[in-house]
Image (tube, rainbow, N blue to C red; front, side, top):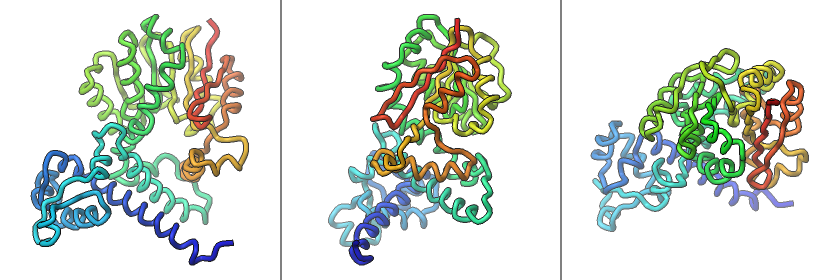
Length: 347
């Protein structure tokens, strides 16, 4: 068994990694990485460009330099009175606009710390406050949708969209897709961009997400085929026949009312339509959670408990679909870590 002193170096390395992500979070949410993208700036000029306080920016620049996200030239490094900072490769990687951006790791790190602090306190009482905890930190909520898009949007385009025939069938019929819990609308944007005859309706419980979804759809030039509104799964109506209802990493948020939920989903689609559920796949064996791909899911499941949720096994979702007369089929992705369960309504 290793001693505490033998374990210390790995923990110190983990602590420095956490500090890197915390610094990156500050840079991401205040637009500092993007402001530095084109040329070097001193702290005061950077603060002016980003519209934030110069004192905080100077201290952030010094810390970001220490952690390898910023660089200065040799003369400025020797005379630290008014250095001009530029992005290193690591700094560029945290820019939200960088393809494959590392931004999600920074957002997840601070969100995870917030949820861990809440779990530590709530463990004494057993209270589970629900979704309200996601809105408790004003700096985090606006980045929740972009975080999900950066984490899963490319994967959806590369792996899931080409693999499921139902999307091509939706395109052939020119159907309507509804995304419940749409966030910033990334799923529908990517769907209608690939399939030009598909239209989409997104619903979300946070007004800020809806505004963001509308803005990004307009920027992408697909706003004519998309609409977004504030609403929830229990009270929504679409004025035209719906061929597909999607819930992306959202079903576990309403699982306690699954009988009601699946009845609503079934009734929302036309005969021959489909309910498409995308969820992290909770493993059958506890030992699987030690796999590198599964380990973050175990941590997130603790955070989900604070919100009154827990991750699901595909067999549970299939059983709930059968209960309301849907015919389910499960598709596994990412070495089995991600599950898409399609429930079809009889024609």
